[in-house]
Figure 1 (cartoon, rainbow, N blue to C red):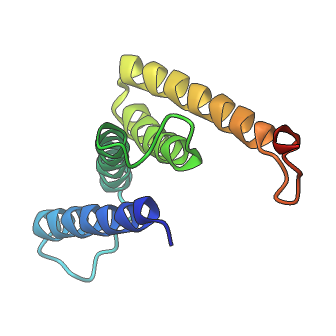
Figure 2 (cartoon, rainbow, N blue to C red):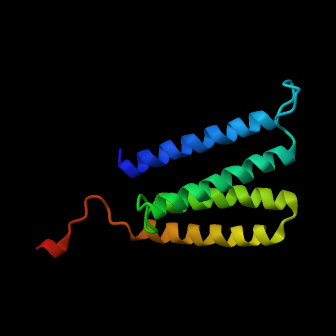
Figure 3 (cartoon, rainbow, N blue to C red):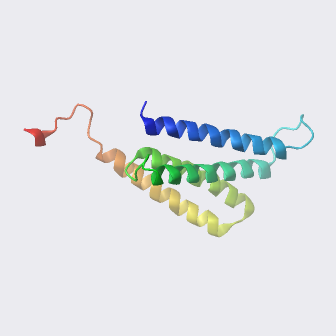
Length: 128
């Protein structure tokens, strides 16, 4: 496994643990209640999206990911989705719009990157 992918997995696990710990502290005193309240789901989606944005940016700044790496764009797409869910629930239209645009840019860039990829068995003609 590449070092950047391993670091990404570790950072994702840490963020997931931090968010689950935060949710455990914020949970109601009634353990028999399930998390079905849309406000709680929205909050979880929003904080998860925020964490994914932060992870993507940290990895970009540290040089572990580049703008040409599919993982960078996947983190941005899923982060934007979480923040879109949260913004829609809170009627936060500026955040909703900017995250829709952010996600569209990331999806288009990811598609361009995937379409540009050479097949694994392609011959590099520049070496001949």
